[in-house]
Image 1 (cartoon, rainbow, N blue to C red):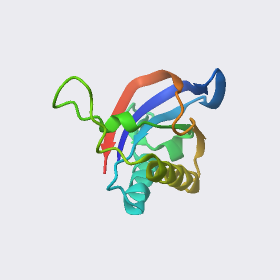
Image 2: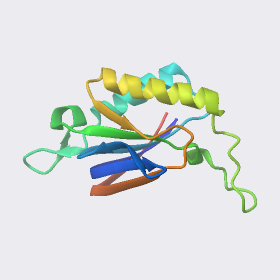
Image 3: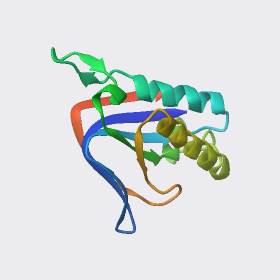
Length: 145
């Protein structure tokens, strides 16, 4: 599992001109899943995202989690995170999970984040999406299980 986490001010995702998810502040997660990911990986990453200290305390140090600081998550499935570009000019996506497996794992991941007490907004799995965000910081972290 790979996640690109961007701390964000306003963020939204649109499909066919319709907003399917929007947040005022929190994280935008681009979530890539591979065929070897398990529920253990999903649980680990949900806890990691929920508890990472990426929000400033009164001294300006990154000491607070999204749970402590408040905020929501905009979760967007992103199979292209598993692009292999080592050979040729066209990426290979052989390491990305097949759509049926990836969708089930992505939904499980979002539900585990909700179980941590977070508000979760989402894109639409498998759709062509327009993601808009104002990067806060900027704080961008890459997570891998």
